[in-house]
Every structure is written in C-alpha cells, then in structure tokens.
Length: 376
Ligand SMILES: [Zn+2]
Ligand SMILES: [Zn+2]
Image (cartoon, rainbow, N blue to C red; front, side, top):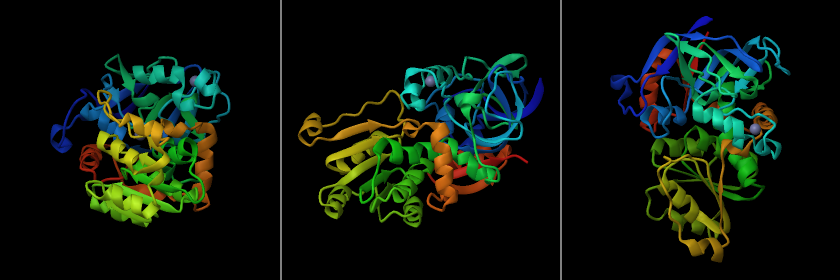
C-alpha cells in the first residue's frame, strides 16, 4: 500500500469563502494497488471543475470522506491483472464516468449513460464498486471514479483514454470533462452544421469549449451569453460573433432580430433554471435547446407546453457530451493539434494542491475558467 498526498473532502454542503471555511484537507492517504482491470496512474495535471464545487457546496451531494477531482491527465504507472490496451508509461486522460463497453447504453454509443458506470458514480466508487483509498484503515470515496486531486490514482481501465505523447499535461487534463462535455454537446448532441446559428449560455470551461466547437463545426452566428463582463470579453476572443448579458431584458428580441426568428441551437451550460429558460426562448421555431449544465436535482423547469408542439421545438439533455470517450477524445485532441479547437485558451493558471481553497473561491465568484493543479 502506497501513501499519497490527496485533497480530502470530509463534509459536503460547505459554503465559501473557502479560504476561511477550508472544506478540504491535504492528507496522506493510502492507495491500494490496482485490482483486476484497473490501472495506477501518476497524476500530472488535474483541473478544478464546477462539479468539484458542487460536491463541496452540496448542490450535488456526495458521500464523504471523498477525494475530489475528476478532470485529469497522467501517466500509467502500474497495470492490474486483466488490463488490455495500456502499457506502463502511456499518457492518459481520465474520464469522469467509466464506460463498461458492454451495457445497452454503451453498446448503443452512449457511453455517458453506462449503467454500471452510473452505479459506480452514485456510490463514489470505481467501476465494479471498489474503493482503493484508505484513511486510518477506513475506505475513502472516489469523486467520479477518479479522485484526481492526488499524486496518484487507482482507476478502472474504463475511466482512462490513451492520448498522444507530448501533449502538455495541463491541456490534456481538460479533455476528460470540459471538452468532452462542451464540444460533445455541439458535435454529438446538437450536431451543429455549417451555417447554423448557436447561442451558448454560461461561459465557463464547458461553455467556452462549446463556443470553440461551434466555430469548428462551421456555425456562422455564435452568440455568447453570461452575467460576468470578463467572460463576455473572453467569448469574443474565442470567436463569439455577438455577446449579451443574460440579464439584458431585450436579449431575446435582439437575438431574434439578428437571426430572423431565433437561433438553430440554444446551448445551456450554466446549470441554472433561468439559463434553461432563456436557451429555450432564444431558439427559432423548429430549433433545438440542448442542456448540459446539471442543475440541483431538486429543481424543476416549467415550459409553455403548446410551444413544444405548435413551434416544433426540441429539448435535448447532453451528458458527457453524448460522447464515446475512446472515439471522441482522440478526435478532439486532433482538432486541438490542428489549431481548430484551441482549448488551451481555457487555462487560467496552474496551482498546487495547497491552493485549492483560493481556487474554489475564484470559481465560486464566476471569475475563473480552468485552474489546473500540476504535479511534478
Ligand atoms: Zn467536470
Ligand atoms: Zn456500459
């Protein structure tokens, strides 16, 4: 059993400012060696995502104690028995939900809906129900099958995707959550095509990935919407043709004016009901609203029912970007390497494990995009 440094969450539902409430403790945790079909990965970069904040503040409750972190990349260090397709030294991106490859959703090309993967994430365990972390002899939960704010992880081989050698680690980390979710919502769920019009609501790491993907897909009109002025400026830099403050009472009328009736695709990436509502209303008749933002599970969303029929609207949920990670992560990395999906623009700064509280505050304030913990 190896001892590693890891960020442990001991109680969920803690509010900020996190530099004062300090919900995470950096502790020495025992890491069990990989079991059947599992890998040990030395983490090189692990990015802070809104789902980490949701685990801390209780918007999406998790069992504790929990090692947080799920958007990461690293190097395979040890193979458990029965592992195929990986070798020691392989660089991998870790994915926030394991995909077994055998259940009906996996066989239908919807790895994000994997049944055993969903059960594992609900238990905060690895695929198959195992926990490979121990504190004082007691099991510790894994955030989304990964637990990446740690020097090393033991994960299911179905939580890892091989990536090209030489990709910068802090960029590689982004592909397993932000890019998979945001770009996947555009390419897979919405299937945005050349000349389409798109609005993206919520310009964090996922929303900005969606904006970049909309440009790569050939959307000619790309609207960025948020409530933080700096994010609107960034959206312009990333290729938004128009930006609006979500609180502008005229935003629907203005977007309808720009597009002759509304956008083809309204992409909600904020995880709040007002954004879902606005995304729906921004769509043209016959348009499609896609929601990827994960609101608090207790919330409901009323819509004018007749508009669904009389205006032939479509509402689609998008989990993990409707992606097949082993197919899509290499594709998105290829687009990045060709200069068509410059997701390195999402990187705000690199930090150490000890800086996570300050980073949670920056994320909570709506200021930060991607802050990445790097390990030497
Ligand atoms: Zn995430
Ligand atoms: Zn499956």
